[in-house]
Image 1 (cartoon, protein in one colour):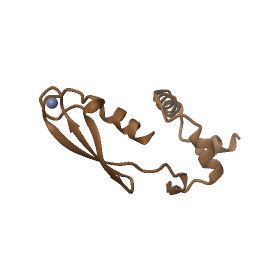
Image 2 (image 1 turned 30 degrees about the vertical axis):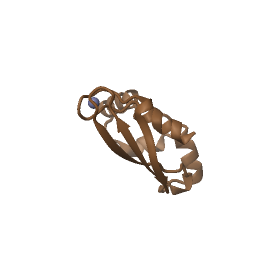
Image 3 (image 1 turned 180 degrees about the vertical axis):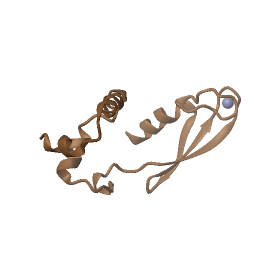
Image 4 (image 1 turned 90 degrees about the horizontal axis):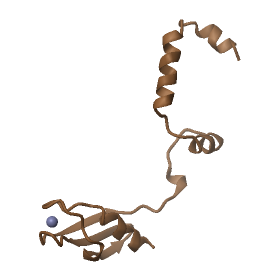
Length: 108
Ligand SMILES: [Zn+2]
């Protein structure tokens, strides 16, 4: 349920005035049209009232702009993001690397 999701999401947002988290009960959805949601929030701690506008996009994979082929996208989407280990691996590789690309690529 999208409404419940938005309430959960904004219950994690802090009040801009006093820094307290909004209570889900004090978050009201005022309007929704074409993915634009307007929420009214009320801070139980300091009494500040505010409006939040949120754009919620429908997840649509065809909207992704990429030059990957479908097979590549499928392959990379299952891979983990580049991590510290990857950076350390390439770092130690480059430390040892003598710049001989020809023999590097002919090894395969
Ligand atoms: Zn507050």
